[in-house]
Image (tube, rainbow, N blue to C red; front, side, top):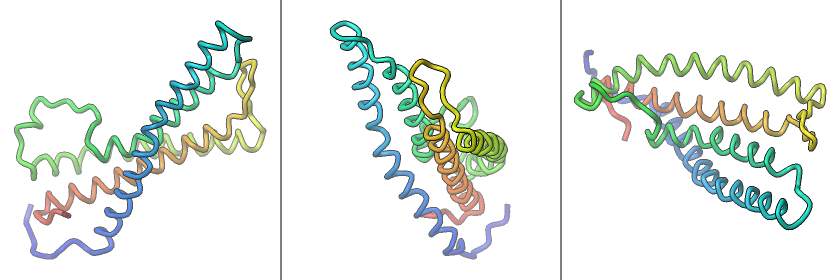
Length: 176
C-alpha cells in the first residue's frame, strides 16, 4: 500500500476513543457478573440441601452467564483475548497483521450482521407475544434477548473500532 502523509480524520479517532472507552467500562463492570452467577449457584446448592429447592436458580445462572459473555464480548475483542490460530500471524510485521485483520474482520461483520438480524427479530417476537421460557419458573425472555442485542451491537461497534485502527496501521498512520 502507498502511505500518504494525510492524518486519519478526527471523527474516526473520536469514534475509536469513545467506543473503546465505553466498552472498557462495560467490560470492567460485567466481569464481576461471574460473582453474581457464583452467588446464585451457591444459593441453589444451599437451598437444595437445607430448604426447599429454588426453581429459578439454574435458569437465572444461565441468564447471568449469557449476559456475561454477550456484554463482555466487545471487551474481550478490545483486549485481543479471543482465540486466534497463530501459525504464521505471530511472525508477521504489525503492518502485515493489520492488513490481514482488515480483510478477515469482514467475515466478523457478516457474522455479526446476521446475528443482530436474528437477535432483533427474536427480541421483537418476545416483546410482542410476551414469550416465556418453557421451564417451571417460566420467566419472560425479553430481558435476556434485549441484553443479547445490546451485546451484539457493542461487539459490532468494537469490531468497527478495531477495523479503523487496523486500517490506519496498514496505511502507515496508526491511531495512538
